[in-house]
Length: 114
Image (cartoon, rainbow, N blue to C red):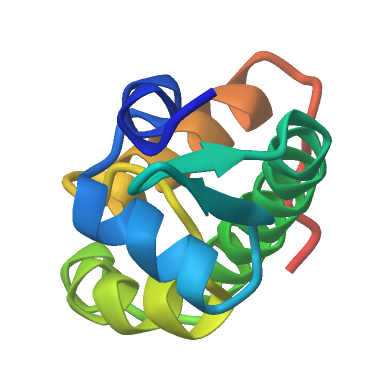
């Protein structure tokens, strides 16, 4: 797979893909001036990324129940994504995370015990 295909697969920008390659989060090599991406490395990255997203969601839910507003959580999301190396849509991340948590609690599958 090349870098353009990876950007489509991860639903992200070429700039982000270049950053993932440069920082070693995804293994790739240039072949005839085109990045060739190691698919095993992509699978491993996707697993790490999903775990990082779940950790951040859990942290946001805890912070929300501790009194931090959804607006404030969304304001800090960009820095948190960058720090954790997360590839995910930023728009509405905090709102969606809190909504999902509340809906889980409403359906009885999750209870906040504050």
